[in-house]
Image (cartoon, helix red, strand yellow):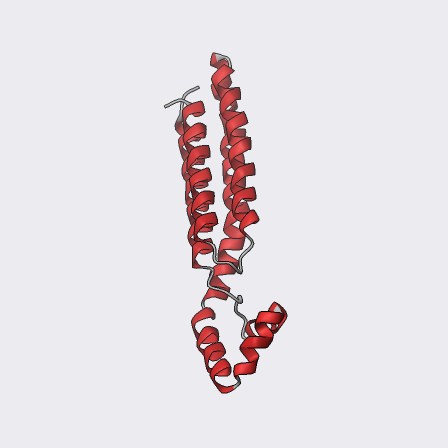
Length: 159
């Protein structure tokens, strides 16, 4: 398999993962990040694919830096994936506590609508994000797996 083909497929799949994150993100989330990070990774992969498409036959010996770059992308997204996963373990209990607090004090929900800081502080005290970030965990772990897979395929590919 050609390195350029691997990198182009990788770039398209990364963009699809970013589109999934954008579409799945709740209103409280920052949707721009869901597009920016995968967009940058896909752009770099697209440029590398173009390089490999135009590379000479002896360039196959230089495929290791490209594989290492893909592993770098994997590390770049794996770190926040691990952190989000740890915080999301607290989400169900914090969400139940929020609902109970709103039931006890309906004014809390009104204050949270006026100022998101009230909700953020409430959830931060419980070590949880203030909204369900399952979509983000799925995206980050998918990007990690795609990046590791791309690195492996680049390493075993020819030209």
